Image (cartoon, rainbow, N blue to C red):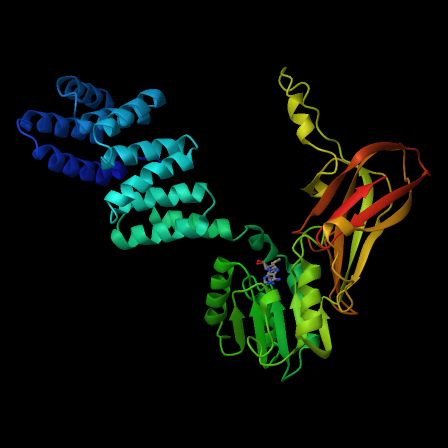
Length: 471
Ligand SMILES: C[S@@+](CC[C@H](N)C(=O)[O-])C[C@H]1O[C@@H](n2cnc3c(N)ncnc32)[C@H](O)[C@@H]1O
């Protein structure tokens, strides 16, 4: 991550803080008027963008006063800002050798370490800085960024909020919080929510199923769209559950914005924690959900719906979707050779494209050769989900395929159809109307050459959350 000042203006508040601190620090020492005035001058030059002149002045101060951390810090900041990393680190080190808790040097070195992708090392400086300056907003912001780089998003958010409370005008905090928010809400929500085929199908089925007085459970509410459809269709109560913290807060606001807060009860939980009597006043008549990934199982639809059906659904309840089919197709999906890229051999990377790995594809936009007709990989009735399968006890099946042409089979691509009810289904296949999911391609552990008409036995395994394929 790069934390720098985009303009001199943006840097000014920081510089002013620095100047004040340096003056206070130096004022405690005798005969320092000259040094102070030179340092102030250097800071001014630095703030104006005349880095060369500022660096010269800092250097003079360093030579004249070997024990002034402020001079080493100023010089180090300029070095760091000009890409002179080694010199920058040396300057900050020297400043901190002279004064181990000197805040501008701690902040400067932490900022440089973050730029160098070393958040743990930056955290060490920031902890010292926080111990000596617990109410400094700059320390809090940098600590927030370090925690963000370490993927401690909750703690990062707490730091940004504290920085905001300490100094509401500090630039960049709102942006940092927005970055945090967008990291905790995957961007596919945006394409999913405007997938008209998906939305329309769910709306039609929900409107057909919901009757006045019913209690509907929406598992994985996202923005609360399906909950609001159920409420609008006349449900007496909709209980909705969303495990993502930020997402749940969005749903809460969306539901209020649309005026459904009296009908919809929201919980920021994984559905597995829901209890009748505690969260739900009674069992539910309908469970609606769309907790799938491109290969259906990856988001834990089986464990979540298994629990909902056995523990939360009233006798005679309905599931929307009622069932799902996973489809597959044998194909050749070329893996680009990296042997000659602009005359360079990059093939070392090829071993990282490991057999058995998978990646998302949009088949109708990628060059490929279909080597079989689509076939059924698996079918799931959500009112009768088989018992949990953990990794070591995968379920194995086989599919016998006929090669539709000659070629080298190196992958199986999968997609799904959700049977929302007995009338309406939506699919995520290359020729289906629901287009935001795309498909998931599993590379076979071993490629196989096939002739047209040849029979191929494909071995399919799964546990509760993923698939494996081999020939
Ligand atoms: C694919 S989105 C669907 C959102 C929304 N239902 C819609 O149709 O627009 C799935 C959401 O379910 C949440 N989720 C998945 N499994 C869950 C579970 N068992 N309990 C609570 N939330 C879950 C995820 O965090 C994600 O936000």
